[in-house]
Image (cartoon, rainbow, N blue to C red; front, side, top):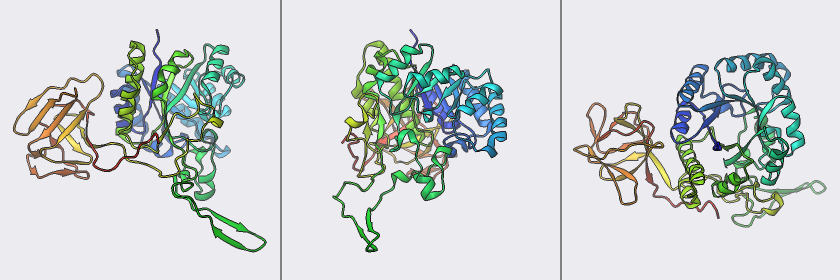
Amino acid sequence: MNKVELLSPAGNLEKLKIAISFGADAVYGGVSHFSLRIRSGKEFTLETFQEGIDYAHERGKKVYVTINGFPFNSQIELLKKHIKSMADLKPDGFIVAAPGVVRLCREIAPEIDIHLSTQANVLNYLDAQVFWDMGVRRIVVAREISLKDVIQIKKYLPEMEIEIFVHGSMCFAYSGRCLVSAVQMGRVPNRGSCANDCRFEYTLYAANEDHSSLFRLEEEPGVGTYIFNAKDMNMASHIKEILDSGAVDSLKIEGRTKSPYYAAVTANAYRMAIDDYYEGTFDEAKYQKELLTTKNRGFSDAYLIHKPFERNDTQNYDYALSKGSFEVSGLICEDEKHFLCKYKTLPGEDVEIFPPMNSNIVEVDNEIGKIYKKEDGKYYINFKKILTEKNKELESVHSGNVNKIQLPGTLPYLTMLRIENDGETINPFA
């Protein structure tokens, strides 16, 4: 039996390594403005993207290149060069949105599989057939599609791979086709430079042209302030239903511009969900508990299971981004003997160890601190001393301090140290 693929975002080289280490089968990312995430595209150079592809391939994982922007005529020659340079890196696929770019990729790099971006808005088997005839071998279906329609597409085109989004930010506009940012900020969403204007707080006014009057609309508290702000997608509770359909080949997590911790937690949670499904031990509460530790705008299971007109809880009118239930206090360095502080670390505090998949944690107890396992089955670290790499003792260490801090023992590279935050968290399902 072929397991469904878990596909994670790779906003930069570190996040690529984290996603793979925490359970992803494949990652996606891009270089340059031909990707629909310019900010993350700038995080990669050709050299570091090549390093990422090599890192993935050495571990039997895949990398898909995002070339899903919509080019102007003036950019086409540059686009041709970009496609060639990306093909030379030997990735496992191109993610493309525009039909003309699909054809261009087939001409320049026929050896690279083409995946059709969700921006192409495929909702039915007729459109899927057109792209199959053009040489597309995987479709990232529209985020508004229903599972019934996914099953129907698979029925008509059984060889076409189907990828669906299961987690991450949602756009209030149809399949992300929004121009609010372009109108207000001059940054074009469909070409990768969205300013996220939909996440802003708005005040509503009414005007009467006949009387030249303008007045502010009074809003009910908590209603209508963040009028465009969509909740984040969270399909972890529906993984069994999705995989039971037999129609889905890849589960995709959104979020190339999100934090390394987000990359780790989402890969880990959905890896557990997928593996537990195949082992017959699916437990949605376990995965949701992990996902609740990440920052979010509230959660919704979107439209795959429920039709859009049946929903009235997909928008968050109260806040743009909430705290998750945990903060990352440190990230373990490549030498596995030190960590870099990301929040704060104090002596005498129990800090949870959040390691990559299948890690071996060795318990220790010495003058620096101890690494040990609690009754909850999780490992923790407690520092007796905060020592820098050069043995300078600190009372505490906070984010912004770039000194490597000694560990009492060794921990796997990219392991995260996390502590429950002391602020009030919001129920993201409310």
